[in-house]
Image (tube, rainbow, N blue to C red; front, side, top):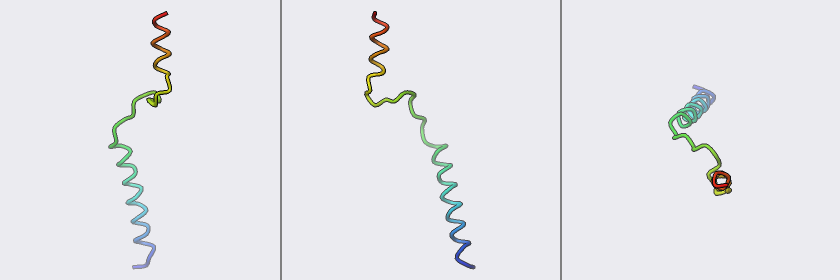
Length: 48
């Protein structure tokens, strides 16, 4: 067995792991969620 076969299998395994991770992780909330104040503006607009 030459050195390319194990390397190719490793690359395939890493790619497969990345796809599985992206499918399995929970979805993020919509919006930034970083305290930028975008939610505050909407509340103020409703009060007026």
